Amino acid sequence: MTNLIELQEKLKACSLYGLLLVTQKALTRAGYGDVQFQDRRQRRQKTKHGGHELTCLWHHGDCASSVVVKVSTYALRTRNLDEAIGTVDRRRADSAMVVSPHNLSPKVAVKQGQYATAPLTVLAGSELAGLVATHGVGLLPDGTIDHIFYDLLRQEERELLPYLVQGWL
Image (cartoon, rainbow, N blue to C red; front, side, top):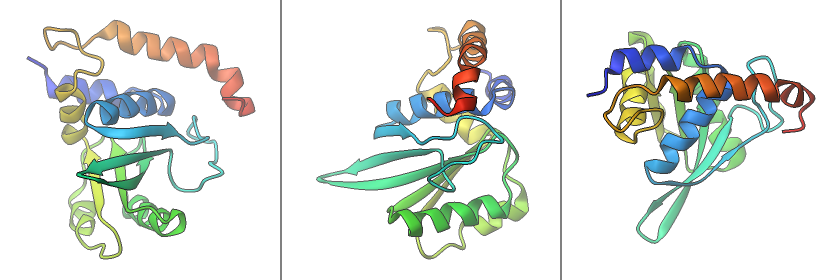
């Protein structure tokens, strides 16, 4: 059985790059198609695409909807939700998703349902941990956390850091 609190703490300890990889894998396993990285891999790095780190497709029947995904290693603020909705308009996407390993504050939770221009999904804290656990990302077959997986994520980032800083990846 997966301890969601421990998994959430493990996700909080991830760098942006590690959280992007975990989110990409979880969304792919959840049925989102064509989950792609944009050009931002580090916290202080700016994205040339503005306001999001991943794009993907959600298939429902014969239709596919484009989704922009904003990933944050920090607790979400109203500004993050506003940026995601603005990105939907700018990119002409169908919906937005905002992801953070931190729990949603009551103030931000109230704002979540107030956007009328586009659907907004928030995966924060235990919801993100639940998605990751449901699809077995970074877990052993018995459902316990695979600490080696998360150690390898950190190691991979250290090895790729010079390339990430230069923008080559």
